[in-house]
Length: 197
Image (cartoon, rainbow, N blue to C red; front, side, top):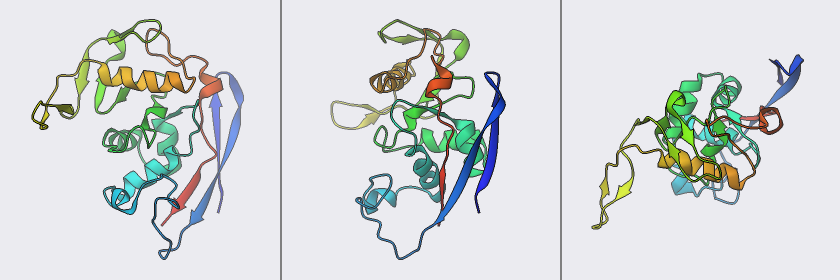
């Protein structure tokens, strides 16, 4: 049964109505990469938790050149924005599964690949030359050693810069404080096709 959600914003006090639809899939469906909405092979899809798969399926519905918020995904999934953020932080298929298309409800770029630059200290340069600020990382970095091993790298803002670069190539712009420009033109809040297994 469709669910109707109305979002009210300062620029649209009358609200925008979104209708969420539910699709049921049969267990006999094939899980090949060609039929997967995420474009993952069966082996890759097996690496995901059921919750990650639900979050990634919704995220794949956000078109290039648009972004959504952790809160919008959480509302569609009836969970918390923090749970959505945790699923995106642990995305092993970025940027193929476009977790870079999710920002904070305020329009702040927030984090990428487990790294966050605090909003109060964020400094970006025009043209994407670099991000500076107080960075923290919720998991060890993925730096490679000369022998092919993985070493922990201190947070530096490089991951957040990667997110900004990916979004810039899709036409989404941020100011030098990490805030989304043209927010109401690029923000995608549905309609979502919710898949129930």
